[in-house]
Image 1 (cartoon, rainbow, N blue to C red):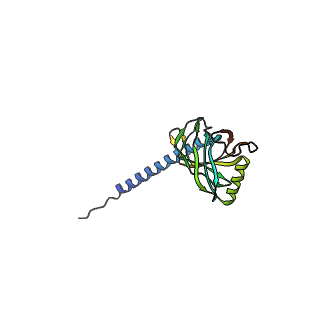
Image 2 (image 1 turned 45 degrees about the vertical axis):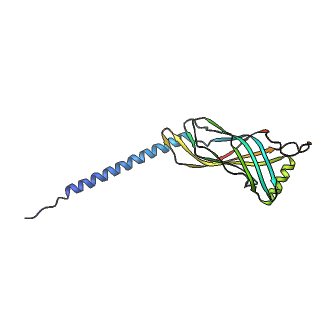
Image 3 (image 1 turned 90 degrees about the vertical axis):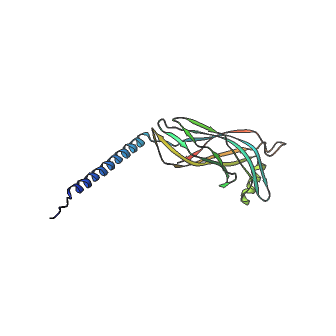
Length: 209
């Protein structure tokens, strides 16, 4: 007596599984399409940074070409978007001179920035006996004698965008702020660094995301 094998039920299960997978694929495609259309309509804009002021607490160039410095800066960041929030993941702030880093990294802790909100940070950036290139050491000494220095304040980190309940992946953030900081009047009887004086700068920063 022979036993007949039934292939009908196995075939139905495969068809059902295939339909379920196709359904999930179509649903995922629709969700992604809706998100990209919403994203295109909202057109999220980059945050706007302004270097408001700087205070010098120490600046000294010593042999063999070592720099010790201590600044406090005030930076504002504004979210120009009315429907997109911004998560600032850990930000690193430091100063450069002629493209050379001259301070350590100072960390700004993560923060969320709501629609049209503005955040203001006043971090200290400093370095102790930081080696500098010989040509930069000579230029720094000359700037100190002249009574002013041109630095570039940089902020690097990552941001995430928040649209409704959706949060995007991380994007690299690069902020560059020019800073022309006077040390005092070079023609006065007291030439050199005048510490503890807050200099208003109000310099717009370039932002790349």
